[in-house]
Image 1 (cartoon, rainbow, N blue to C red):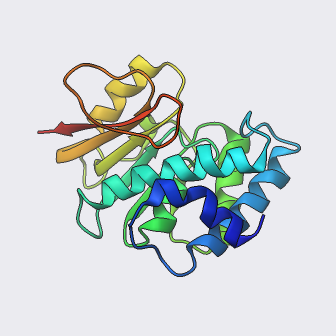
Image 2: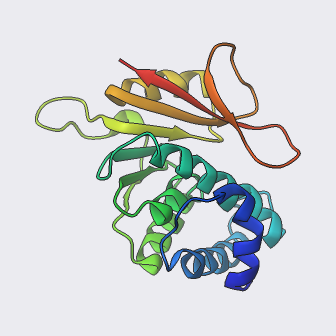
Length: 202
């Protein structure tokens, strides 16, 4: 898919946000890699490239726009259960100053993430294991300014662990269709249900 086509498809998700000059070229490369790997490894159930761009890239970038307006440059971000890299890798492409770690315990998906990071030439880290097993830093549990979650197994347990990984004053960001009352949230563009929800951790 051309850069122009990708730009047109994700325009509603970016709005007036400023983007890096190479964003669309990077997304085109990412899409090609995702399509290639997805033909032999089930990274995502979505097979149509336009839907991939809108659902995976667009929604991830929309979350990135919201995060970019809430955190400082150089903030750390953990993508919990990253799968094929969503939303963490598109957020990294949009906000290259963030220090992003993609956590994925399934070996084939983690291998794809490593290949995507290498191909795209970004500084993103990949943790091929469960978030609970992230190594401590200076004798303390490793925490992040932002933790993102999208589609994860055992969501209840995952949310508990995700909250533990958010540092004081940080934020848990969830792309979800199941919005709890009283939660700060921004509705995703498009006709389908979906929200980017924010939970500040004190």
